[in-house]
Image 1: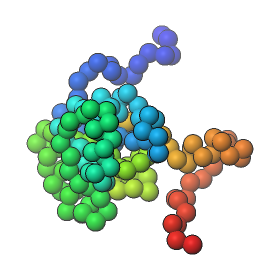
Image 2: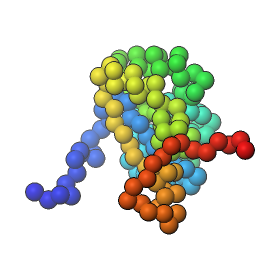
Image 3: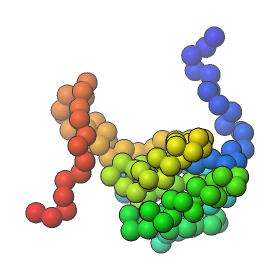
Length: 154
């Protein structure tokens, strides 16, 4: 059997009652994947760290979909609401402003509750700030540790 066979059918439509964790570009909007664009277009709802920023990204790609706010200040209340929507059969995409949700961004609580509730979680990989920086650093890449981002304060 060839090793390059797809593990899932890319033509298959969205999965009902699931949570997509969708990575978004870190600076250059052209870094978004075709799969991420397809998911963002097809889900029932997009939970975004900042609906204004995500709205601009969606508008650029002519995606007209419903957005709801999901950030560090409303994470506790919004998690239960979103889990109920997923349990009712809706598909939701979680996005952060840049990069992968829950990696130094909101999303941990929602993902933790989805796992606890047996909800199907589908990652949609994309850019990674840590791996991207490492790849051009000239440092050894056979092993590394990511301990979070440096503080914005001095």
